[in-house]
Image (tube, rainbow, N blue to C red; front, side, top):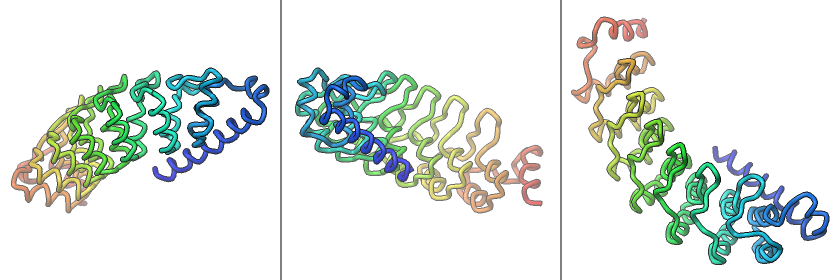
Length: 278
């Protein structure tokens, strides 16, 4: 994931330098292929603080979008250009102007794990509670970065650890499915419900068992997650661990004293375990 982000950032910077360079060297020729707004966005991505006000004089706007629906601020965040980000905000860029799908500058900074930028945008008035049309939130974006301290910052600043996307997928489920024990602990410490269920009745514990992540499973069990909750298909965490042939997971779930023992399983469930042990 980190490699892809670095590669994307490098590509944006190179393309932006070409566009900005073309505009500066030959304004007339550039106007035939790009608008001042495109040029400003490219300059922001390339870190060209010195050109921002010049493009504004040529007709670009701080909150306008380029042909890819990126504002200068979002472009600067995607390319991790702190100096440009600060200058755009100082000049009056609206930190809450989003792309058409609802993607905000704060979400972009959170997804890239830019903790300092997230803090700066928040202090500058970024709405931590905004969500996309899909229900996707800034906290869910932060979980993609895997940065536990950033997740903790957002929760401490009021982001709900239980705010789910439209499909019911919560931040805790996202962190559990990604195998992020530190993030899981921060969410639980912030009040996340370990037994929250999505539209398929899936839980964070089920996601962790399915991924075979022992540390996440242990963190959820410590938080007293219900080890017997099952989705609509009826398969409990114990049964899924059996289906994976994961003996450590089976023992851990049973040793809590709350999971069903193998002897308690219905015959059809026992077949799952027996079948995997052969």
